[in-house]
Image 1 (cartoon, rainbow, N blue to C red):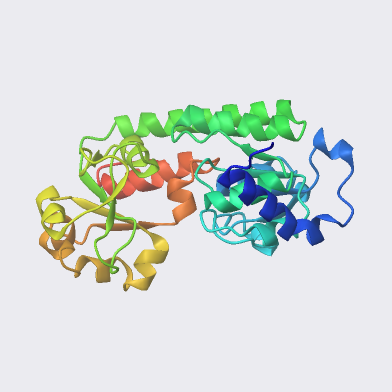
Image 2: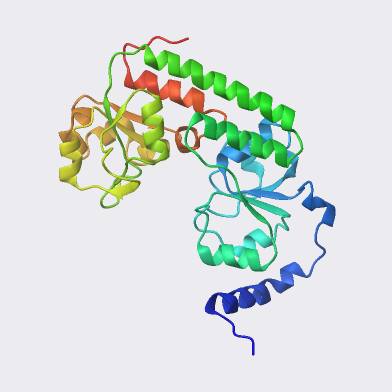
Length: 295
């Protein structure tokens, strides 16, 4: 007698719920070799499609795909960690590109039960990781040569940024806060894209002993004594810009707050680790090192 596990039962229920959407004609089977209806849940991957001239394969993205501006015209299916299966299936994708932490898990299970292929791209926050992701997307769309050229260009630009940063003398302590004004803020410790960017830009993570993104107390922020506080642009806009953040407690009790050294950068640009990341490294480095001179 067959025995259904709880997960198996959930999969069958999901398939039944999605059956009306799946009953319509699916894309041709040949699309498996060259996907023509792709949903990107990775903002930096979306950028790569545009740079390769393959944006026509994208039928939708999640809300992290904010660049280039043309990507805003694509249908949005929600935030990468708060997805619903129905909105995705309605786009009739033949492939979903997703980071490993896309979710919730129940939605991923529903999509798998619906038979939609899900591919996880390389997601390593370092220069060679960006090149690896570029090559993966290029191979997917049948443009390995163009992908290799783009990957080499990005690596060369990272090398130029590294050289410029190496010529600086200051090594400020930088505290990245994922959000503010909503309870205990989340700080970016080691093993995060924020930590990687701070290091590439010649800074020292003020909470390097913390792993991942973790809530930090008022006392911990003051004790970290950051020279610079780094936030995402939309957070700064909500809180009155860098000037407003500098006045917030406990930021006002840190060297960063007292000296007005609050840096705000676009989230995808700062944390996405995509083709624009070498430029982001230089922009952040200029904010961290007053002595820096670059073109």
